[in-house]
Length: 172
Image (tube, rainbow, N blue to C red; front, top):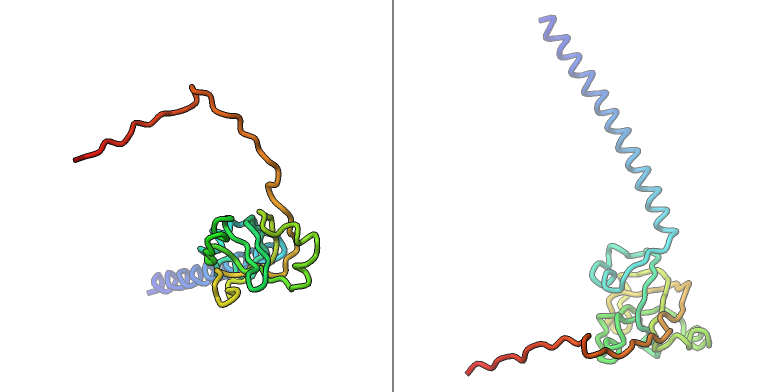
């Protein structure tokens, strides 16, 4: 009986100290997570527009840096994946750009319109733009500049660089 009691007491002791260690470990994990979250809140994340559109809740409230095609016009402030998305009015392939009308008329902002741009601001998954047409919004913009404006000249191919594919055979 005495051996049983000492085994029970030892089991109880190790259970309690193990729980205490586990609680301290969980507190350290929570502290680390809090530090990471506060760091993330102060930093800017490089994110593709595709990632923001596909995972809006994951980036809601985050400061982000994106590259896309910018259009600024009445009821049409949007940054698109590509110029073609703007041309074809594929508004779900873009994010609303929350910017007041006076800002859109500034010369340094106007020079970015209808161009590929780099933009930094806060992503908001709940703002869907004019008539809910977009897939989120970028607000509180802190950086906007043209992107990739240099022209790249590609030399013409020589005959040895060209690959010829066989013509498809027609089945009758």
